[in-house]
Amino acid sequence: MSEPAHAVAARAVEIRRVTVDDPLVEPLLRELTHEYTSRYGPAGQVEMTRYPADAFAEPHGLLLLLLEDGGPVAGGAYKRYDEHTAELKRMWTASAHRRRGLARRVLAELERAALAAGYRRIFLTTGPLQPEARGLYLAAGYTPLFDVTADPVAIGPLPFEKHLFH
Image 1 (cartoon, rainbow, N blue to C red):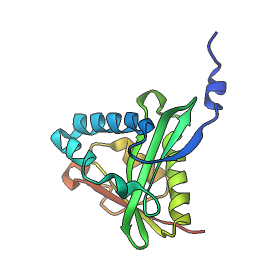
Image 2 (image 1 turned 120 degrees about the horizontal axis):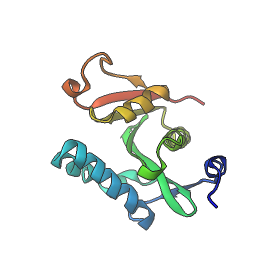
Image 3 (image 1 turned 60 degrees about the vertical axis):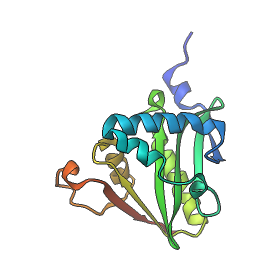
Image 4 (image 1 turned 30 degrees about the vertical axis):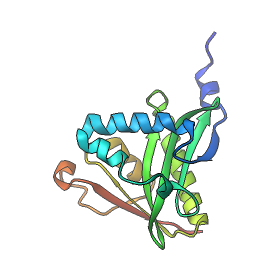
C-alpha cells in the first residue's frame, strides 16, 4: 500500500550543513552538471568547476542539503561576494522531488544563514534558459537587476539581489 500524498508531503526533512567533498553532495553536483550541460553545452561544465570547494565553506560560505530519509533531495550554497554580500550558487532540487517547495525552503535557509553570518545582501545570477529559477527568485522577493520584459536569451546571465533584514 502506498503512502497518501499528504503523508509524503509531511515527511520530516533534515537540514544539514556539508562540505563539497561530502558524499551526500555527489547527486547535487551530478544533476546540476547534467542540467547545465543539457541547457548550455560545454559552458555548463565550466560553470560547475569555476570555484574552489573552499569558496562554499564556512565562515564565508555555506553549502547545505535538505535530506529526506537520509538522502539529499535539495540543496544550495552561497559564497562571499564582498564584505556585505553573499552570492547564491548551486541551487538544486532532485528531479524526482520538484514542485514540493523544497527550493523555497533551501532559499529561506540560505538567507537566514547569510544574515546570521553578517551578510546584508544576497546577489545571484541565473541562466537565461532556466525559467523555473527566474520564477523562484521573483516569487521569493528578489529584485531583478535586468529588464524583465526583454528576451532572457538576449540578456545572458540574469542578475538578482535581495537585501536581508533582521
